[in-house]
Length: 394
Image: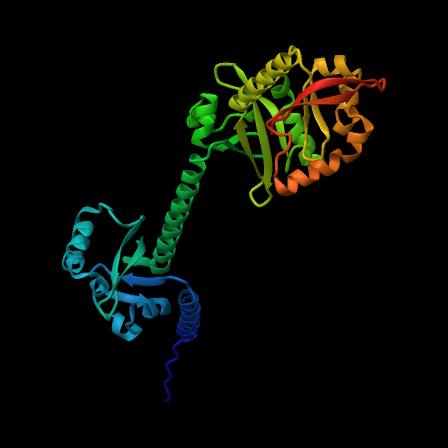
């Protein structure tokens, strides 16, 4: 007799196929993970900043290429070491305790923030950096990015040094401008005052703080101040210069509302778009001119009131001044006298030689008539002559 047992392998074969399929899927996933890890690592290695991944025991699990460049250790030296190797000693000795405190309390001091601190290289040198920390909850890892601030700090120091140098130069320029006898105003294209010197405050009565930020029309009489912004707009639109590059006499207004004459000089600084104006107070000059004019008019009145004729001539014998008596005595008007040769009041025999007398005196300085009085003949406009006493002084 023959006996046979038959066992159905359908389910076993199905399970074997399932296991094989899972193994294939696992291998594929593992390959993909390795590939993805390679891609991710490539991305991290291309980062501009150092990266560290540590576990809850502060042991370094991963670093990128930039970490090695910045700190000087290799990846092999980093991985498995405590993260405190990149810290100054006074921080390193306490860091593990910081981690234990965090794991016990869950209180985050550094995680999720950025902070500026000092890091330590393999050669022992230190440098300033910014540390940003984040926690990967599922993996229980902490990730830190470190940005080296060495160049930033050097750039900041250079900027600060340059600013200090510029401030010194600005203070020097301002000191020079403050020593000026004239008021200075610097305005922008909106007519807003950006700078004034000390003299401007003395002349106008406002302080520097009151001036800065105000429209320049505050120092103008209302009739001019109302239209000044329009003048600026026209210039910016057309480029046609009426006042810029010239000196002009204008009227200015002080804080107390009083006005005074001044000389205004304007220039434009193309680079900064600013306009600079120097204002010279003419009050004293105008007062001096008025005084001189008054004295001159008084002297003319005195001369005109004299009983004797007066002539003032230059070294060429040309009449520059006569008094009223001269016009009465000789018959010419003041306008007819001025600019003519003095020989017009002499008889012809003296008139012909007078210029040579004057030239000889100018060369030799030998005085025949100067400082003396002499009786001579004079001639009127109508040709008639008369005796007169002539006195000459130089």
